[in-house]
Image 1 (cartoon, helix red, strand yellow):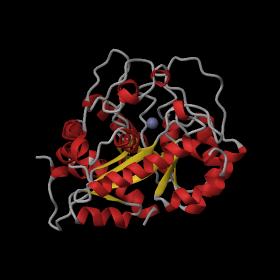
Image 2 (cartoon, protein in one colour):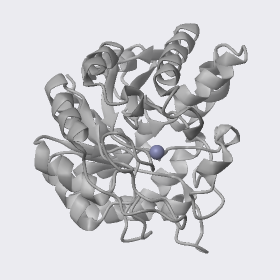
Image 3 (cartoon, rainbow, N blue to C red):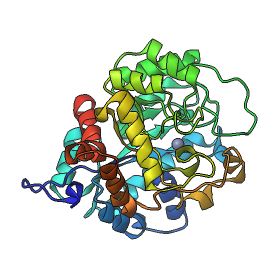
Length: 345
Ligand SMILES: [Zn+2]
């Protein structure tokens, strides 16, 4: 019996959270071509089948538009996300605080939050950051796997990659300003030197919204055991990522069991309270990703969970891996809700 999917006595659904989905990216594309209520049509059935209560949408701008059009594309994505939520207001609610998310749950709706994935829309202009805060962005993923004005990203694979560095002067000012504003810093995709600098120049929690364990798949895109420990020490959060090439070593099965191994490893290093989901499901949007971005990954891209409807498969694997029901609930969503309660109330 899967307790994670059952309704509690209070009428609230148990939290099931996904800390990273390129949702606004997809909505901007589809709405530009005249589609409406995309959330209800393309996402809701899968979200409901997985019992999802909260999803964090990234703001991700592909290389094609960087840097000249990055700001416009970021704004278009936010506009598309909000417009589509308005089309689907019976089922979705845009949220910025823990309270908002709880209220959405009480109303039986799926909460949607917003995160930068790469600060490139800012160029190097900190003065516009508070405007994004006002628009409801509460997470700052500093980089994608490329260089921007603040920092370097981490390599994803075999493509030649120059030596990455830490934070720039702008990057240091940015992380400090995020802390002042109350935006949570997200270190997924950040270079190891950048990660060290974020620790050096800020206090408070960090998250890695969609990263796996480097002990299992050895790529800088995943977290070393030391990084896992440091995030856990700061009461942060790590969401495991379902992309095949950072989940399964080459030639190994690409499935829910492989992903459960990352959960188990991260829990063994940082404790079961630091780990959850940030699936980064990409199958649906791969058709929009330009070839130069696909070229930087080591093998054909795909998800080890094909939609959120397969979430129960992962819960089964967590059960098989020895996590008890309480621990499964923490991993499925309570850990992420704790992060929101402590930082975005
Ligand atoms: Zn990403």
